[in-house]
Image (cartoon, rainbow, N blue to C red; front, top):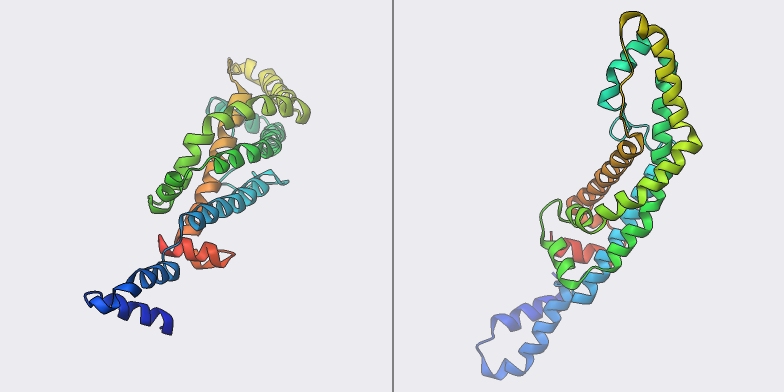
Length: 241
């Protein structure tokens, strides 16, 4: 044990001795400095850790192929599962693949819009928010972002997705898929589904995937605080673990 810390503990243990009373306040201060982080340290550490984590989450999902993993991939809307099955049945599977690929590309290109929204939520953290996140449950950070940033993310993503879907050809690929299948489906009385809001569907999935990545970041911080990049982060997260 550190000698100075041992001395502090001895002084605190002898707190009933009047002759030592002038030293107790100093001893308590030293003990706090050795273990408990200050308010400023806690706030600084949480903001730094969240900024680092959000940067990684957004970078991971916005890079080429960011939505290619099974965990994050934007699947076909449930209403289109029968359409996809018919397409593959008629040897038109490549139309399905192109359509699904364009949806995922649209999600990737929309994700960078999230960075500024998350950063604003981090800047607005109060001290009570910080302590709540440190002392909260396993999902406290993720839940905070869902409350503080969720609505803004959906609002910001939707026009971006709408613009990107036109650029990457989501609507074009969807029309090509439905038109080709309809040529065959009409022979057996099958019709393509109507009223599918692809932009809203992609937006919701992109936001959900982003929060899943944030949850993974939070889990890493809480499970192994000693792996944090700086001594300050290690001190704060280890103390509240």
